[in-house]
Length: 133
Image 1 (cartoon, rainbow, N blue to C red):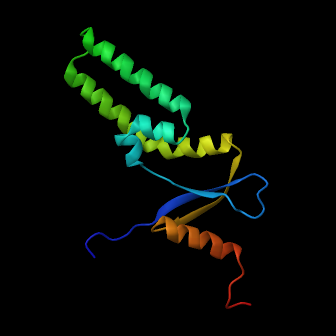
Image 2 (image 1 turned 45 degrees about the vertical axis):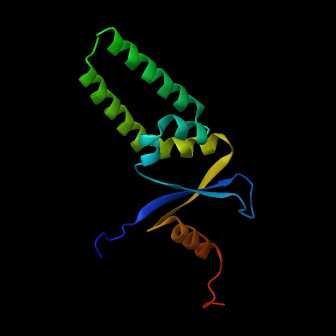
Image 3 (image 1 turned 120 degrees about the vertical axis):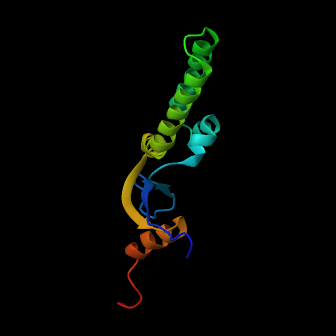
């Protein structure tokens, strides 16, 4: 195999008091390319209003600093790339915190090579095995 699949860690969130686990969400840990590339749209899609405001404010301040020659264009590109990397590495943590503010609780942590396998592993742990029954 050219690119071996690596294990990814998924945080499992469910609504507090949801005994049937009908609204279970899986949030992958690690870098999110969507926050890096589509920062404002990603923040709004995930209902992270303060992150969206922070991105908007950052770009406003960066534009003003470049326009008034406080920093050069090259410096602004480096600062922007650093900011976007910071968003990418912290994005999934903010998604989890946003879910907790909306009444979700962290109920499990699952490792798998893909999200469908993480879902399967999560529910396999909850349900009694067919071999043992």
